[in-house]
Amino acid sequence: MVKARIVQLFTLTVLAIAVICAVIGEWAAPPDVSASGGTNDLDVIGEQTYRFIELEGLCEEFRKIYGVWPTNTDMIRAGLGVTNPLALIDVWRRPYCFYVDTSGKHVIIASLGADGKPGGLGLNADYSLQLK
Image (cartoon, rainbow, N blue to C red):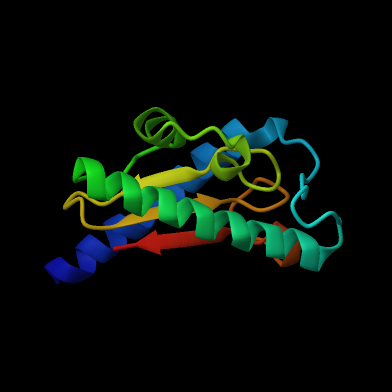
């Protein structure tokens, strides 16, 4: 019962963060797929995947140095001296949403897709990365 309640609370928290990110991200610009050079769906998805891989490495490096997961991209920029701004934003030029669980053992990093709203299909789908 307690475990189910914790999972429910965690899910509601992630959803609340997604809604907040959607509200903040309403100013989104068109996709920036500079690394792939194209703008079709596969290029955009590929570029987002590439950025998640790069961000995962930065988060793991941050945790190795500081002993905690970063809670936003500003911490990564300041803590690691990141100079590539594309590593810290999604392909729709919005900042990622971070959620670190209360134990500090897991972090979920999310992009809300092309529409900047929770849910959706295709390019509007949410993209997330969970690190343990």
